[in-house]
Image (cartoon, rainbow, N blue to C red; front, top):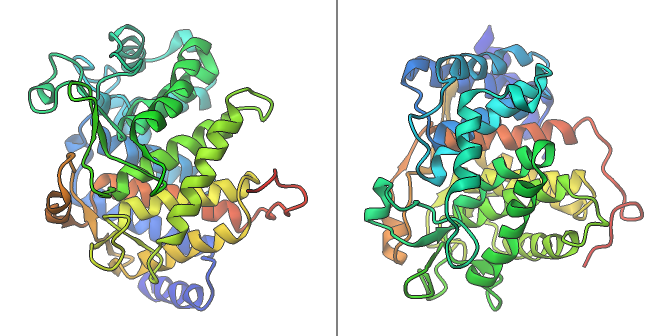
Length: 384
């Protein structure tokens, strides 16, 4: 019976672009149950993939009819990892603290009552020496990754530590909030290609050059930028002096990504090669999340909601199984900066934690859009 209900919801939703709240919740619950059965909680490490998964669960719990299903693994994880990592040494170790921060806020805890895990991340962000560009190396000196990628800035960091710094800083530390907001202009100055209207993956501080070059633009990297921008804009007042430059960047990138979306609603892992690079689920879901949230906030034309819903339709083609065992495929594995062929060789997997987190983030915004009237162009802020 459970499987029949699941299939009925799926077929009825596929007849229209917008998914129903019931289908969003049933699919999200099935994906979470499958993941937890395959990977018991004690195997969840304090790393970036887990951080994106927990944040996605937290976002979806806020709109779910049965939030406790999605909240429980967040509570359990942070009970198990209340002290966080032994030491925070690079960007990827910051993002799990975001769900701990939000968890404490939901309980009414004050900033001075933050768990040890969050305090460690804040200490890392406030006391790690800045590089010559006024940012943080993706791998701080002395961390294992610094042996292979020394003195480099990656797009990944905008979410790995940037989004945490935005939310924590907004609530408790104006100086850290300002530092997080300053990263958008820094990254645009270093990594933005004005002709192609896209971001390169990384900046080498020693050679003072981005890499890769030759119009090679990694999907998930540009998706990280989109997520950072929409989170920053959601916290800033329009009257803030930094608002307009971030909004312009967000709209430029949104417009470019809209122009290269594949017919199936996804994006290619190389953004400018939608037909010759494989479709990738996690980056596509992250972009669609940012677009849908931008529409909800009145920052984009309502037509962009159709693009986000088209992505959701495309992700349906990457789901395998039913309510008893559901997997999401076409999630590219962890990706380092490299040449064109390096990106194309990155294997795809199913049910990687950050891919599921991206799915839950998108589901949270689509769930909101199904219950919230879209702002009209008359009330939305000026469009380009």
